[in-house]
Amino acid sequence: MNKKLYTACGAMVLSLAACTGDNGNISGTSTEPNTVAFGSSSSVGESSSGSFGLNGYDLWNPQAGDYHVNTAIYASRLPANVEADGHWFWEARGADENEGGQSSIIWPVELGSDADSLSTVIESCQGICGVANLKKGTMTMQPFAGVGFVMARDAADNPTPIDVSDWNGVCISYTSDVAASLVLDLGDSLGALFDDGFGFPAVALPKALSQVTKCFNWSQFKFPSWKKEFPDGWSREAGEKSAKQLIGLMFRIQNEPGQYKFNIKYFGTKADGVPEVENPESIGDAGVVDSSGEFVLYGYDGVLWTPTKNPDRVKTSYYAENVWPENAVEDGRWYWATDEDVGGMSSVKWPVVVGAENSLTPVVESCKGVCGVASLKKGASQTDPYVSLGFGIAKDASGEPLPVDISNWNAVCFEYYSEIPIRVELVVSDTSDGLPWAKLPSSRKTVKRCVDWGHFKLPKDSIAPYEGEINDMSDVTKMMMHGSYEASRIEEKVENAAKQTISVRLKIQDEVDGDYRFGIGAIHMMFIDENGAFIRDWQTEW
Image (cartoon, rainbow, N blue to C red; front, side):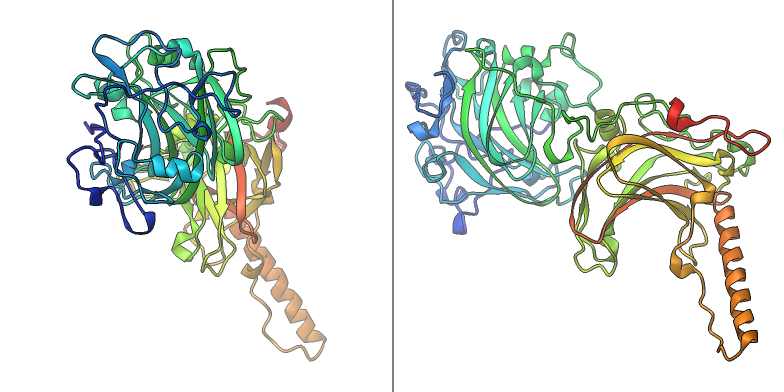
């Protein structure tokens, strides 16, 4: 297990060089997170209550000169031989070789050498500010970094859990370039039960370019959606149980590789009944909760895919398997890709950490579908920037993609929302004329749309131009015949596409760089009667 040692920088027997770097570029790791010193005879002073405080229940107010968090305020009595701590430390888990990342935190000033080594940062920023420099390295998940504080320590300077349930919850004021999270740290003793700390209860903090204050009850701290197994009694009372044995609190940024500024300005308790924050589980740019009803998936049922029942895969063999070759095995797994291979710099901001081997199951469980933010950036690409996601239809015995017949679906239907149109593509073996595609129009609110095979078309440049000279009417006739032939050829190719489909792909593409929210929910097909008419209108009945 990867243990967080919370080792000190400055007062411990570490060289000062390990704590500082050129131009303030200072990084910490989970095994050596550069906390301030331990073991002072009295590590908590009087709580300062400045104009920034909330109802006088300040835990930490840097504008009033606080260097450490007053973890003892309004908490239950500390156990014997335990002293309150509250000193700040930082953690860049990406630097842990066990995780494979290379993340760090870039501080605006050189750190101090005394017990409160982050005091220079606090004085400079009137808070704790820096840049989370996220580098993925060989990690299989998104890199992350954070800052936090330990509640208390025993006589041997070991982090010790204490009961802070009397706080009723916590308040934080902050700014952040991207969505972050506030994590209840339960320490190494419970780490094995909570996926080495990755599964600790947390709340989401939305992106905030201007300073905001968010308050949360203990009951609002939840386990990550991907966590399925819990110790007895923890699944419904994660936050409340954590508050009775809390090791520390962590402000954590986890995102795509990049540099993201943050500034923590205040911590307080909810002991005086501060109201709950609106939409506490919103996750900023990649959020799934919106008070306006926009950008929300509803968890409907679809014949091909019901996300709330089968998050892992689409049932691609439904009503089609009888026309598949004998060696075809149903696939249906979701995949996603960007324009990186053609020089683009686009990415997808997911609302939660994706699973092993880039599995989107955690995303599906969080959103009731596949949702996120398509962050389009052209870079050196010669095409408009894009991201795509889709699902394979079938594979052979060796696991290779296999083109099969899905024409019996008659159409493919989606529950979705998107800030820009989505291009639905049928990925086929023969791509010489491009891929057949149909358009789903943009919609900020969830809608249901079906595209039958007749709606698909090939790119405009698929039709070969007439290259002969036009000197008389006979040449005009030849040109018209060529056009008619090309139109028939393209029409036939589109009609046959559904009989040799490898995957269904949804491409989010625009000529303008930017961030665009999207969500894909239930997926359906269409039945037709003997006269070729649809016998179920999914768009209205579902």
